[in-house]
Length: 183
Ligand SMILES: [Cu+2]
Image 1: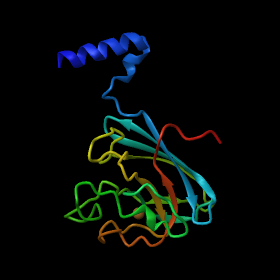
Image 2 (image 1 turned 90 degrees about the vertical axis):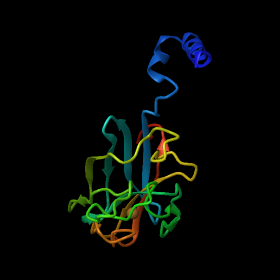
Image 3 (image 1 turned 90 degrees about the horizontal axis):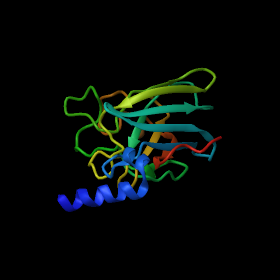
């Protein structure tokens, strides 16, 4: 431990005082996902920020079909059109059942439905307390296989295992370290 702290102090000295804000244990401050539809259309971004209460996900989407849509973190960081089945099942590091209304639930990747208004555009912030940006934790979005954010055609019934009866996957974005690209 002494060696480790000596090493840490040394690298802090080398890097200068601002490095204090980035101790080796700190998770990446931000991640993003660029959401695309099955035909490759850009439908917006999500920005993920670590907070003491979980990961805050700020969504800014456009051109999605109006109505209630399931919105989940999925367990594979691949968005292969058209079906996005490459994104795998819901992110579920604790091996639970699907849905917040399921007494054997819920998946860490389960989140509330998003409600897209008539114009197809939505900005919304949600907090997922079951995931983290902290690399190396079982519930980190930074897994070897990656993770994705997925929007479905239908709403999640919050009960039906394994996917809430939410239908097709209509938009997908790989969760990637760093801020979203300026657009
Ligand atoms: Cu899903």
